[in-house]
Image (cartoon, rainbow, N blue to C red; front, side, top):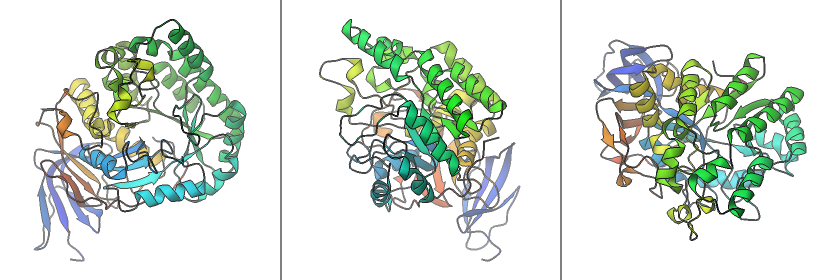
Length: 465
């Protein structure tokens, strides 16, 4: 079969970087070997009928918390990647928290590597962390293949002594200098600790502890201040910068302006900021709690406009699971509930439903946001992120006519809570292929567990475009 194909995905609406075409996809040795209107199958070729389906590049989820090592009872690689695969995701980059110890040095990285090996249904890479006291670890972590470094400008929460901690301005500045010296990438949770801590203390002292009270303690200005400060430091140090889970169009516009002025900076938002609002948070309760918080409808539509026009670079889930009990604190305070949305399985369907069906955003733009751009920014391109000859055959097959309402029983993550339960989506992922191998099928679930491989970024420094 030197000149043949192991598999042909036949007759689907294939979402390419610049267009959608009814094409066949020929797969050989786990990679895309050919794209054409019609490919001839050999005697041993497996033919996959994709007629009537959208065939998208598998999602590259660059922001996932699977909590290993030591916190697998919150999620873990096996259950987390099952949920990702069921949502059409074929590769992900795992955050350095909330595992214990966090991935801020080589021994911790080795523990995470050991936990992931043989446990992931899809391909994976790792983040490193920038925290007080680990400046001398950054370059070594970079050499060992972490995709980027994550830091918090506000308190990330948690109680363990060795937990991940926020950085002060001196650590931010010195860390940026170190990371710039070897061409690395720094990603920031950008909220002002001075603003959010003060407003939270005042609210709790006054007995204001509900969902909208929480949102009021993390106003847009807290995000804007932190973004502006970080951009200033990055201009001074030459550090490449990425902002995670930006929730306001004001901050996204500020970042986009810096990029147009020449800074190497990108901006990410999440499906929950594009699909849910603060009113949903008030109605649903802690299952919809996150930081930064959900915003109002006007800001949400402005985020969509930016995402459609190129002012948002990429979309990632920020899947942040926890046991259900942590979403229901004994005192009933919204402030005491764990802040994090568990949405990994729904990310692609949210983007297609809200973006393509409800707002008419082209499929190729959705694919760029969830696959092409994250693959480029985090060094997984040109292997991941697009349907093109030579790329891994990472494919999400989606039925655009299979509307369904998400049930708790549909979720494959360890703790089946999600703000999307009860929501109806206009389409559904029916199959997910990683390097040409079927790993998830609707009705069967995960059919090939544990086959994911570790990815090491091959290129650094690409701003998506």
